Image (tube, rainbow, N blue to C red; front, side):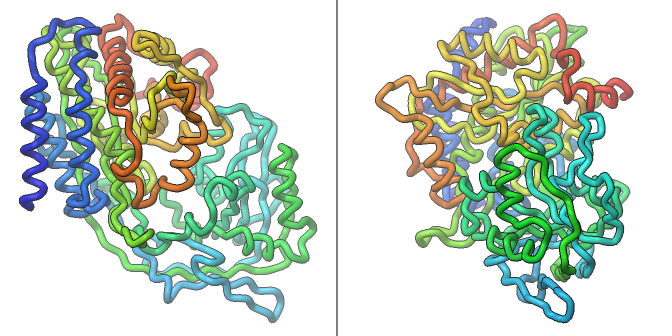
Length: 553
């Protein structure tokens, strides 16, 4: 361990020791233990240049994992991994060789080679060094099959042996929950493979293009590896070998793809924006995708600690707090800076997880239910570490009763509200509302349901295993009326999200950070003390889709 990293351990330990003092076993007293100074110390260490952006599998990530384990140990949280505090996760890793990878559009005897990063980007296949496909192309709308909702983009289309071109997102007439589920790229890939497709081309819609410019999306293409976790039998998770090429096109390349087709790209975008049904048709061309890459394997840990419950009957049940520890590592420089520190995304969430653990560890007696604290890796590569833990939890799977996830809470200004994505799906919503009100905050609804954020962070790994979950983040309404909260949040997402500038040069209201963290503590306290565990609401989409599998286990 470097001297700089060791110094970070020492500084945080001193603050932790100073903050520790006895507290009565009450919700208010437990929440009051949260310290803004300790939270800031955690973030400053985890987001420091010394950790080199915490990319999963790197020495910087390992140092961050050791820091989290050490903080849990000092707080009195017991190890609950498969190896002490650690749960090693096996990953298949692939880096694309962009110089030897190509994409071509064939129109009869004419072929056009698309330019890497200008026209297209892709990840490498995680199990095959070389994949190639050349096949006719079919535009299949959103690539969604939802017969229970009267929608099937593949109805009447024969895509066997073909490359399907599909729009990101899902039909706007879907309500928020099924739209979130069917927007998942993993679900689209599974459906395409089941229909016999051999490749996928993903198109961005106008909303995506306006919010995240293509140049920003393509900036790190080829530098960040593709990853999948690997099961004990050698299978890669959510891997579909039938698909021999998956790529994303720029808006300009997508427009050219529709030349000579029954509908222009602009018309398709307009139909999507208007919520109209997308046409589906064969494209007058063949697509060739030829990808080469380098393969490797690594193991990188989740960090897991437990506070055992005090109730002889309920202690077997576990409330999970989760936050992703990884970020993007070292990447393409922006304004001369190549370290993607991830201060808000997600050193902030991990700091809150640690401070929540310390607050609960000081309780006497402990909460009735046991509480697991899980800092996961691989989130930036597709929710991988949390998905592995949800498949192979270090306690029996039926004992997981709830997940409370923290990911990139933007506390740029004094807060008037918080958002708990997923709160409407289960009884966790009422508990989140009460926790927010106890801190004088309002629980705001999902501000952008079209963004389907509920499926885009680690709580969704638990949802897929039938566990009621929510994703707690800061709202955009400031307590200071002179601050334009929505504008500040939008500016961060456009200018600093997934960029080196997500560091502590960004504004942080540390008092609001502590207040937000206290809401987090209160939610878990209520869940851990309640007579009954959280339950999905009747007729809830996610509960009906994933709950039966949990019941069977």
